[in-house]
Length: 154
Image (cartoon, rainbow, N blue to C red; front, side):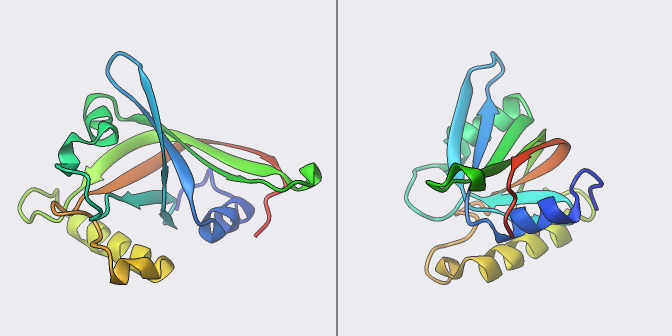
């Protein structure tokens, strides 16, 4: 369990439906995309799903992580009543998990399969959309810092 994430922060992340993943290439050029995700054992998992995108390994976020594993991950809550605003900002490192057998480090297969099962449980849409894309890619974020602000409703 990642000690950075208090029970309140964990509940906020577990109940959120979407977040924003920020990556940067080797020269520091930023790129941000909205993503679905699950929190498990203090790590964030976000898949590359099977919607048509071309070669998933050429996606900017995948290329950026290969060049520069430093990432930021933001989950926020917005309401017109600004007393109810809140966010969690995680900064850390990302790696790419893949379903390709033999290419995984010892123990990664369990992590890959577990994250895939949790994503399917949280998002029923994965009954109809392939999870992990054709290469079975899932991004794993290991937080190194956590900043919160406002109301963290859960």
